[in-house]
Length: 328
Image (cartoon, rainbow, N blue to C red):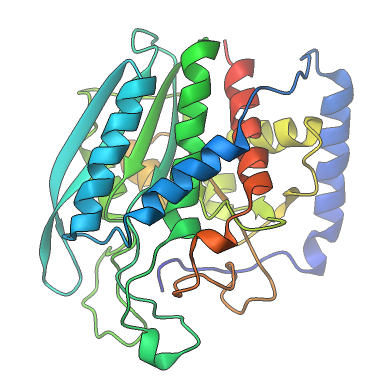
């Protein structure tokens, strides 16, 4: 599986969730922060998502992948002070090698206090969870699984260009996240997911780079999302989890950012925590009714632009902007 999911929130956590909610209420009452909803254009974010899917599946080695890379570099150059393209060789589980690129845009590069905002930009070469067996070898658009997080972050970058954050912000688009084995593949043992984040965590774009913390977005475009607190995030970066979920609560987004434990998910943030030792969390949707724990369109041909909700993009983007605004 792409991500190992162990769903922990059963009755044992009901009292824990209530306690955490009370804690957030207390924080909201005592916080001296003035909550003024930051500007975030969900139509613009949606347009950024659609622009990616219009290229087609952004699979390693494809023309769509190359075209989307150039598009993302152009957009970050519009909004960021400095842009880096980190090229590396992705060796996949099936013995193939691809040229891959992590794309990094930096704002306020002179600031020593830095925050990472990230997502992956490639899409899966197989629709291995499609309901139709004859479509499971098709590549997917990855509108939600990949493009939604990138679209939110492009709009965040556009807004921060004028809002001038008090900290440095590095927006990182990881490549080669989603070219991992299917359940039917006889894959050798190894870390075959998150190849871009693994490479970046061991070889940052700036020598000696560090950041106070990071936030990863994954599958944030579904309707009525439920963002539970992913357990690697809570283990490695509990203060960041409380920072983000507390901010969302004060913005009125408590029905989306659920203050209860979620699953244990091996995603790009895991490798940043493990290898770069930067505390990073994962904002990722959980669906208890889907059977996979993710959106029903996950790793299917239905993960397309028709299933992207502008409001959900706005919820996540507004929360991120408020988090950055609160940093000094």
